[in-house]
Image 1 (cartoon, rainbow, N blue to C red):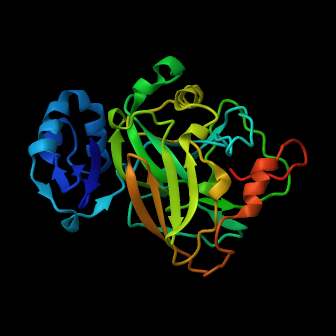
Image 2: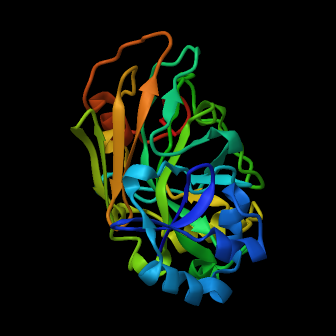
Image 3: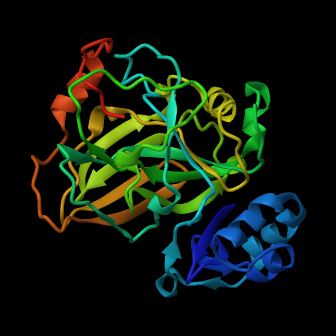
Length: 315
């Protein structure tokens, strides 16, 4: 099943011919709209599955032309993220796991606009990522049980302002997942177009991830390049942060297709089995960078060995 929010927070099921309103099924177990409605879907999926399946097959669909799709989870309690969790097509050995958080109010949905802030950034990058949605909460979740805590998956872009300090990467305490300020500006967490339940995805470690800017191909990698599996990553983050149903988890990215985001861009992300969505970019300062893949950053990521004195790598 593919769950969406549409037309000012109404919960629905996405079909090829449109969207089926499921608000009447959800209202008895939770609020009828927005984040609360989607959390009600997630928490009560076992009890409501039969009704959702019936609606998915026989419910009247509203044509997509009459629907405005929105961020499926507009206000999650936590936005957790893995850092450097890909092997860059085999160029990097798996490193010790680490992560960070994005601010809750960074979320936008399809058709939204990323607004680049007035800061002294070297560049603004798009990081295309698979995003897991927690269906069960918990703390200290073990790897063997981790996937039972996943409700489904979305597409996501981790928008990043690159502000290099020129020194080594800051030390991260093992008992915290810090909020990454350079990734937490308003609009810096596009997600969508829907939440696809995990039973429809198959193996989330074998999905093609693509991103295009103004129809120009940039990102193109498979999640089989992941250094630490989703289950390993959930065990890691839940040892530090308690998670709740409706929290979201960016599982990391392959950095080899990164490029500049700038005023007027239309960016589309597509993940196999989940579907595409697009958003716009606005920069009130009208800054300009070289178009295409940022080859310098890609090379740094492949060759960087870290350690004292090394340049801080993109997070």
